[in-house]
Amino acid sequence: MLKIGILEGDDIGLEVVPEAVKVMKAAAAKVGLAVDWRPLPIGRRGHETHGHTMPPVTVATLKEVDGWVQGPIGHNAYPRGDATFINPPLRKMFDLFASVKPVKSYANIASIHKNVDIVFLREVTEGMQSSSVTHAGTGEFRPNDDITIGHRVITRKGSNRVARAAFEIARNRPRRRVTAVHKEPVYRLACGMFAEECRKVATEYPDVKFDEVLVDGFAMKLVMAPQPFDVVVTTNQFGDILTDEGAGLVGGLGLAPGLCIGERQAMAQATHGSAPDIAGRNIANPYAMIMSGAMLFQWLGRNRGMSAPVEAAALIERAMDRVIAEATSLTADLGGTASTSGMGDAVVAAIG
Ligand code: ATP
Image (cartoon, rainbow, N blue to C red; front, side, top):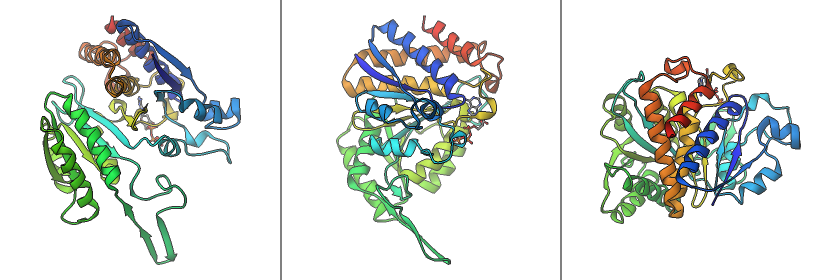
């Protein structure tokens, strides 16, 4: 039995998260996976019902679940004085150290490149230190009005665990290749330590090919010929930029799922924000949220050594591939006329 939290978030989160959960429930039922679903207030609903956008009851329950599905947060809609940021504190609190972002092209969906199938792992607890990654204070300061100083933190532990997570993912993919992206010739100590840890971990995975590419050259290759890349692991700020570049290659925000992973817990979260401009109209594309849910199942299954969640994830992926290939139930951003729930229904139907 898995325990999974449902945090709808704000705006289109209220529409796409229920679709993701609906699809996950259908896949779980098909493979006989029991899930204890825990709906939890967050965002505006949290404020309305518990007086806080991240209510203590939500945080306490998240400590007990295996993972959760989290919708986008609409920061702009909150009353002043309440917590404005939710995701960085949550990542810190639960030590969700890597952001996993797949970038996949589809034959019939407009994209800059075809035959792209990359999974990015971005370390998210270190790097250039802003208040979102420090325990207290911030890594930036301005001693006088003409000078600003920022620093970057890289640790062996942080580098090692994100590299390990990348090799674990690569091991289960057909091409079995990890590319570490850094800039060691310039940042000899910081990128050097990251690269050293990647190399160390690589020796433990002889079944996975390993190579290294410098970040500037990688950015160019990603634009010109992304097809050879399989799993790409990198540090926080490089990953921040490259994952958006990757999403742009294959169709943009509506098609960019994500999973934040820790040692034992994970949070499914699409890359897109709460899109208030299209909220409440049942037109948002649920792809990213649904596929984030599939990633959560797959990761939990592998992490816990359970086959049913991995099978449920594969069912969702195959069903989504079919819905996209058939192209009769796609939302407007994908060139179709279906509603959010219409596309979710089609994925459920394709699960069978
Ligand atoms: P945030 O600041 O919350 O991260 P943002 O300003 O980066 O958000 P998003 O809310 O992600 O922007 O959305 C940008 C635009 O992309 C939206 O206004 C919307 O038109 C479109 N968009 C985003 N997500 C989706 C989706 N799932 N389906 C369709 N369109 C979307």
